[in-house]
Image 1: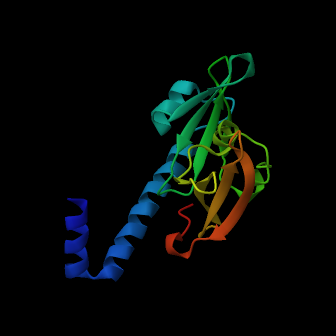
Image 2: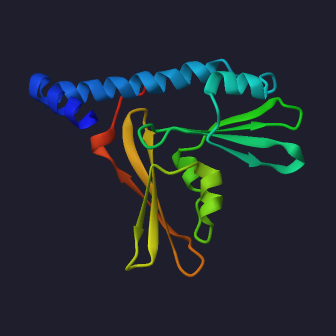
Image 3: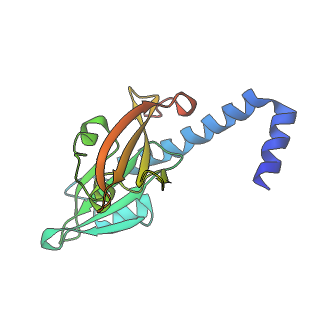
Length: 179
């Protein structure tokens, strides 16, 4: 069904119009996150406020002392993932957009897949390379407001630990920053 709609759009509107529609849809979705986040305030907003603004989290990570981190994933189409920490008292203590070059510096060889998931959220793409005994996890993120990059973590070895990371320009996926 989706393929038929894309074919119709391309034949009647042309590929430029289809690309423009895709970019506009990405902007609308990203803009929604900005408006939702503006409603939340560290030390004031409750977990109920977070869920009302952001919806149900994709994953909930337990933290020390009864705190919890709510994972809000915007992959594969988006360029941001959020980790929102709620204290044991039910009040939001941190809201972090985790797909940034500064945070990618935390990805050091030897980390487990679970540790990487806790740092960055679910990846946009997981690609196993059976012959090499490796698996790549890739996240999309923005630099300089609109330039799309991919951050790839390669896991392997007997324990499936992080071997290396790479950052690549993704020209096909760049969008203006809706901030």
